[in-house]
Amino acid sequence: MKHLFYILFFFFGNLVAQDQAVFEQANTLYNEGEFEQAITKYQSILDSKQHSAELYYNIANAHYKLNNIAPSIYYFEKALQLKPNDKEILNNLAFAKKMTVDAIKEVPQLGLSKFFNKITNALTFDSWAKLTIVLMVFFVILFLVYYFTYNTARKRFSFSASFVFLFMALFSLGLAFQKQALDKKDNPAIIFAQKSEVKTEPNQTGSEAFMLHEGTKVQVLDTINNWKKIKLADGKTGWVIASDLKLLNNF
Image 1 (tube, rainbow, N blue to C red):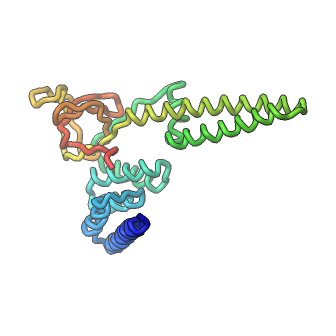
Image 2 (spheres, rainbow, N blue to C red):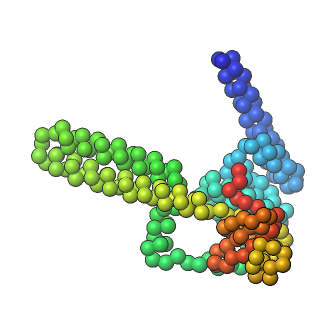
Image 3 (cartoon, helix red, strand yellow):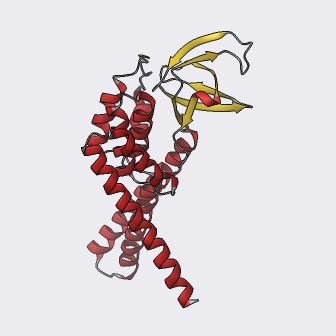
């Protein structure tokens, strides 16, 4: 078993080293202006099931240089999923979106809904869960101090502080579940077809609701056969052929 572990460790370590070498080769090709060749190299790493924000970011930049609208936006969005607050990714994504045809105004969130969604999306589900555990640890420590101390002032302080941390832990736990619910509903995709006719029904006989063009980001709500029900940021919905778009949550 020990020998098997060493063999597996060496095998996976060798794969990572190979991918790093290919990544550096691709970067060299990119710097030399050989963007198509660089994309081929980057894609070979993706095909080996290796994913990173840096890889998606570089392949997005290569597509951007070739004016490949949909792939550049798609891979910038993929990079953003792994590094949500990265300024360089956000900046380059904004430039890529300027190449799109569709001008879709997002429906603004108002009041408490906007406030709570902003707080919920400030951290990932895992981060909220970890924060909950940390806060609960502080609650337990302070409660134990309250239970075992005999100093009146310290007892009063530890009791009050422990329940403050308990409240914060429960609030954090609630936000964790809220974030999980939002993530489950979040099923974004990018339109890859140069022109995609959005239908009112999931079939070819349905009337045209509107037209979308490559690079537009949509939310996928439902699937029937080879049709996807989508929703735009402005609230419009319709059905498109599944082959016209590419899901972002597929890794």
